[in-house]
Length: 149
Image 1 (cartoon, rainbow, N blue to C red):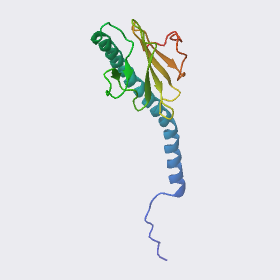
Image 2: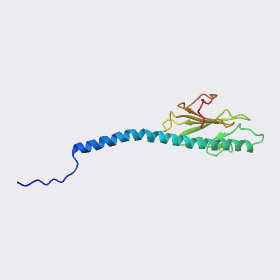
Image 3: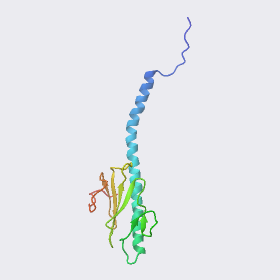
C-alpha cells in the first residue's frame, strides 16, 4: 500500500489559535492607538490656540483705539476675521472679548475623535487650561486645578 501524498500546511486548530492571539493583541493595541490619536489632536489644537491668541493680539494692535471687541472668526472674508471658526475636530469661540481682556475656547465637534475629551481654553493673561471631559464648560467657569497645558 502506498502512502498518500501529504502536502503539509496548518491545521484548523493552529489557525484558530493564531487568530485568537492576534485578536488579543489587537484588543490591547487599538485603545492605546485611539488614545494616542486623541492626545495628538489635542496637542495640535493647543498649538492652534497659541496662534489664535497671537491673532487676537495682532487685531488689538492694528485697531485704534486698542480693543479686542469686534474680533470675529471666519474664513478671512471680513477684515475683523482673526482666525478660522473651526478645524476638523474643534469649533473655536471668542468668549467675553472686552477692551482689555478675552477668553478663547476650542470646543470638540460632535462625532469627532475628541468628542468627550474636553474643551481647551486660553485667556489674554496667558492662563491656559483643558477642561478634561467637559466639552462645553460654563462661560465664566474657572480653569480646574492642575489643568494647565
